[in-house]
Length: 141
Image 1 (tube, helix red, strand yellow):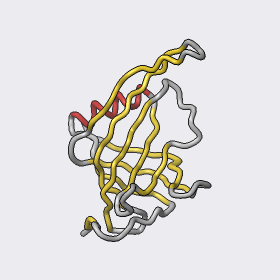
Image 2: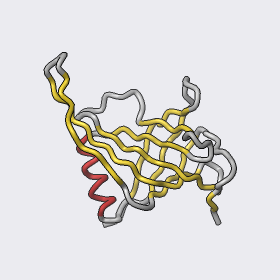
Image 3: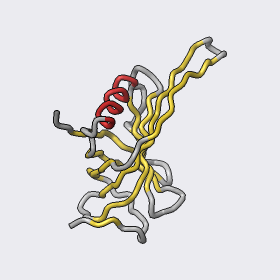
Image 4: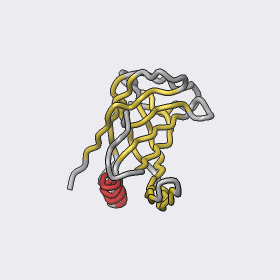
């Protein structure tokens, strides 16, 4: 049986992690006019509480998952970032998606169909975080 570990700091281990969404999600949507190029950039993101389980572990760590879309095209070098929160017992996971993907994710979360996901963590050249090279979730209709 897995348990939530409220005391020990999470270790950012490379490999395939498991996540479970729980609770209510919140989000923001808007636009940003960029005068230097006279272009308009849209933004949509949501924050979802989750429990994350590292590879080869039964312990679950409370976390916040930030899912954000800032373009219609994927232009990023990674799919996201896993890092420790200001409280080292908590984790922060950022997932970068397109507008089309975030619309689908919002619909699936609203219907309670999307609760579990996996993501691949790779070592990063920066301190305090690891790159996410990919992620996926499954659902049943």
